[in-house]
Image (cartoon, rainbow, N blue to C red; front, side, top):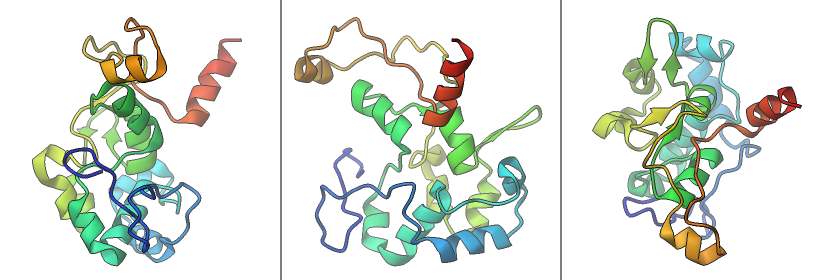
Length: 183
């Protein structure tokens, strides 16, 4: 999305309704191989390699193959975090998505984006404004944020209660695991 949260096309058709690169899109093989060849310490947090389905290779692919789109993009979202933004107008990212899809570091000794990783893979632009393009505010799923509530637009559009709460997101497989444990 651009700086005003409008869609930007990721298609050669330049159709702005096509603004999603799905997890199963494997065009970024070259970028994935390059990122893995760096052996950066961030890779240890995801089993020593990124997969084609993660965000860094896809973002790098955009920079290399659709530079105009990359330069216009002010916000790169994984689907769960986009849903939180869409329903609340709050740009709060989940530590679940950030760690598992985008190599955010969260362990006993460190928490945050590792700027050396983004420099090494050629995405220095993502470091600007406290990593605002991939998430300046990263929170735990199930954490309470008083400001995170359903937007008036969504209340009106879908006829939902204005008392509906929006939670910090979680990757679908992780949410399913949590749901399965509570049965």
